[in-house]
Image: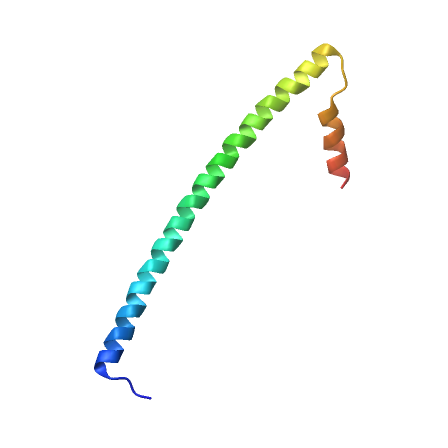
Length: 77
């Protein structure tokens, strides 16, 4: 089936517009992923700092560090 000039222009325009939309969505996805990665890095740093404090508190109190046991169990899996 042959397209008329009007149909060809319509589909060409549709293709160009949707390509731009896809490119914009890809950009937005990358932007959101970057935000998530930054937030995860912040949370991991906070967890590491809290873990160091917890480890030190257990050591100073002379009590068992339950988190070490959990770490060992996780490593075995």
